[in-house]
Length: 93
Image (cartoon, rainbow, N blue to C red; front, side, top):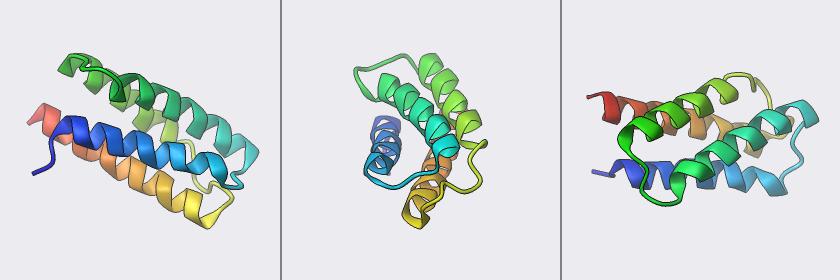
């Protein structure tokens, strides 16, 4: 079973991977902010309460992205959303 810190690192990696893709400008702002927040918790060993708060924020930011303007980027955003849900489920259970 993957632990929360590995899931957070994977979340950050999915968002970082969109940097090289032709993402829609508006979607790019949401994704970029989500990536910055994910990076904040992917580095170091923050307390669970901080991870919960920040990953919840990532989830809210990514909810603003319907279509990233690039198929691969959209798939990565969807994967990041799924990862955020998994992280929050693990922390809350």
